[in-house]
Each structure stands twice: as structure tokens, then as C-alpha cells.
Image 1 (tube, rainbow, N blue to C red):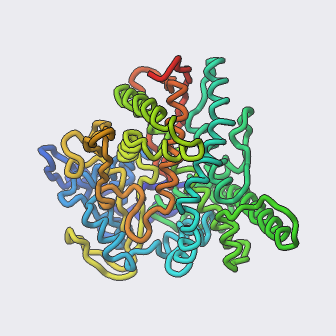
Image 2 (tube, rainbow, N blue to C red):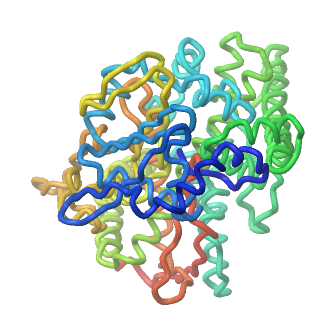
Image 3 (cartoon, rainbow, N blue to C red):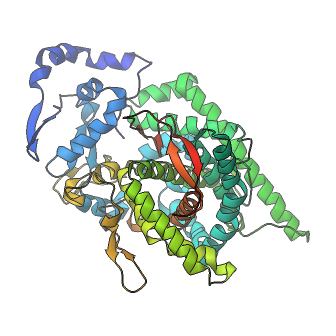
Amino acid sequence: MFELENFKLLYPLLLIIPFLFLYFIKFSSSQTKKTCQSTSFEFPKAYPLIGHLLAVLKQKKDERFRWLTSLVHNSPNSTFVMHRPLGQKSILTGNPANVQHILKTRFPLYEKGPLHKTILEDLLGDGIFNSDGDVWKFQRQVASHEFSTKSLRNFVETVVDIELSDRLIPILSDAAKNQTVLDLQDILQRFTFDNICKIAFGYDPEYLSPSLPDAKFAVAFEDAVMISTQRFRTFFPITWKIRRFLNIGSEKKLKEAVSEIRNFAKSLVSQKKQGMLKNLEGFHSSESDDLLSRFLKSGHSDENFVTDIVISFILAGRDTTSSALTWFYWLLYKNKHVEEEIIKEINKNRGKQSNKTEHSSVLEEVKDMVYIHAALYESMRLYPPVPLDTKQANANDVLPDGTLVQKGSWVTYHPYAMGRMESIWGIDWAEYRPERWLEVGTGEVNWKFVPKDPYSYPVFQAGPRVCLGKDMAFLQMKRVVAGILERFRVVPVVDDGFEPVYIPNLTAKMQGGLQVRFEERVSIE
């Protein structure tokens, strides 16, 4: 995460004034040209003291992420060393061997680290995505119980299916009848927010209701994620720290957003404590043994710590899944043949499940959707919900490709770039082709899913920090895909030639959302 945020405080530029003249005189000769895959690519030159700052400043703000992607793609070992001011370095890699080294082989060496924690502490505190060591291990151990087979069945059959049939489908039916245009990204965020609150906290926010109510929490969450991401992008962290100290600009907005978020999360914790207390006093309660209950029962009663946990799981359960599904429906629109194959699979599985009991049908039907599974994997290859992931080295090291790592350096692996590398996916990497994940099955099984190794496809991380909610996310997404597509065609309302913009915040978004119409299917085709 090396993009540079807009400077509102100008004094840091004083550090580079002596170099500006040099920049304008020599910039045309300051680029090192290298050849990769028969094309000429210009690598930026690092200057003393200021490193690659001038090269970063040259890039337009909305082009910097793609520029960083191109640095990874064109580096001979798929690794680029970014020189930051005053001798600091950040390493950006798309090399699978390096990813395995970071996430597994030398896992204890590469932590979130103090810089990462400082940047995200206002939003995430000591939550699972911003902690290391025993604090991280404790949260992961407690959370792992939430993803047992029993919990997954409960999630699909009593949470996702009810939210789908009682809320989502009626809203889409009404939109289809009235030819209403909806923002699919917003609808999916509402859906996943309700789901994660129900399954993890035993609370129903009713965010996906027919009126599509405004929610201060949702707006605050968007603002907090965006501004926290901007902190990562600055070459001069002192700028945002001063703004935070003075409580001005974006940092004032972040403080207000975080206050809204934490108040919401604390209310969930307080309600859960009261419900558990009633149980102890002999009152009948519908409290389930959800994730929040488990943390409170574990003996950690510190309200701030449990609040951190709640916020982290909302981030994971709401934003990543809705992002993946939004891009999935866009790719379906661009690849009609994939949608046709999915409709065939939905129809076939419905017939197979008709002879099974009602209790088992929903979960088994979702599990049997192999082509949809592959189509989702393929969409996340091109548009990963988490575009980058950064670690900090706590000791000197050498990556497998020979890159030297100094203690304290940021090391970032780049799932977005890796999903678009010919060396990993072949010459047809740009094609949306679910079949690359499939082999022809035997008997009544048309397809068999064959995963890539997780270090070539680190969309869910890998190693000890591999995503705990991966199976739950896929069950949810597959049920939503089947539930929507068996009833509707999803038709984006866009001009010819329109291409959506991928926004690489902590979790990725589609810029401006995805405006769509829903058309009722006469029958499954």
C-alpha cells in the first residue's frame, strides 16, 4: 500500500525542494528501461534521501494502484523494492515462492507489526486483523468454533436462506415489477451486514428491509475504511499524525466515524451481556451460542477489547463477501456463456435435491454447485476482495528470489497483480474462464473442482493466518448466486464501453457501485 494521499499540509515538500530542479532537468533520463515479455517498460529511478517519491508524485492519484501492479508484472522476479524517504524500503511482490516464505515458511518473522497497528488502531484496535502473538492466537482459537459443520449448516439454513427468501428476493421482485434501478453493491452490503450480525452477534439490524433505510453506521464504516487506507498510502506518516493531533481534516472525520462505529459495536456487546445475565438468573432467552457469546464466556470482559473483535468481524463478514459478489455479477454480464452454465447447474441440482429431505436439501444443494464455486474463484482471481496485504519484518531476511529484507521493512504481497500474471495463469489470464478450476468428472458428476496452491492464489491468505471464514463465505455466496439467478437476470445499467473502476481500499469496492435492473425469468432455462 504505497499510494500517496493528497497533501493538505505543504511543509513536507520542503524536504524535496533541493531536488525539484534536478527532477525537471533530468527526469527524462532518470528512468531505467528494462524489457519484459517483449515490451519496453520504464522503471522509476530512486534518488538519495527521497527515494521513489518523485516517481510516485508523477502518477495520477487514480492511476497509482495500476502503476504499482505494473511494477510487479514487469519486474523479472515479480518483486519491486520501493525506496521511501530517508532510506526506508517497502517490498512489493507477486512471486508465489515469496508469498509462501512470508505466510508460512518464515511466518513468525512477518507480523502485522507496529506500523500496521498504529495505522489501524483507531478503527480496529486489537482486533484479529490488527494483532499478533498471543492476542491474535486467542481470537483465532475462539473464533474457530464458529466455523464448525454444525455452525455452517445453521448459517445457510436459518440465516442466509431466511434473509434471502424473506428480504432479498421480495426487494428484487418489486424492483423487477416496477423496473426500478438498484445499486447492487449497496444491496449486497446490506445483505451481508445483516447476515454477519445475525450469525456472529445474535443481532438483526434489519438493514436489508424494503425501505432500504439509511444507516449512520454504514456511512461511518465506509469513511473509516477509506481514511484508514489513506494512512497507508502516505510517504510522510507525520502528516496524518499531525492532523490527528490537531483534530482537523480527514482525521477529524475519521474520529467522528470511529465514534459512530464503536458506539454501535459497544451497544451489541452491552445487549449480549444483558442477555447472558438473564440466562444466569433463570430467565428464558433466545440467546444462541454465537461468536460474541463465546468471547464473553471466555473470560474477556474488557469492553474495548470485545468491541475491537466485533468491528473486525463486521469488516470481514460485510465488505469482503459483498465485494466479491458485486464483481462476480459484472463478469457474468460480460460473459453470457458462464451464466448459461450456471443456470444449467442450478436446474440440475434442484432436480437432484427433490428426492432428499427438506432439512438436508439447502446445504447439500449449495455444496454440489461446483461450477458456481469455480466461477466465484475465477472472479476473485481478477477482482480480489482484499487487493494487498502487508506484513512487517521483525528481523533481517532474504526472500527466495534473492530480495534482501531489512528489519522493519514492509513486505506486501499483491493478490490483484498475481491474478493477472501470465507466469501463473497462462497466456489466457485475461479471460474469465471458470473451467480453469475444473476437471471433467465421472458418472453423474460433470465437474470436479481443482484448486490452485494458496501461494499462487492468496485471496484468502494462507499458512497459519488463512481465512477462517472461507467455507462460510462460499456457502453464502453460492446460495445468493443460485437464489438470485434462478429468479432473475441481472442487467447492469451502463453505457456502451463502460468499465467499472476497482477501488483498492482495505477491502476493494466498485467505484460508484453497480446500477442494475432485475428481469424476472419465465423459467429456468
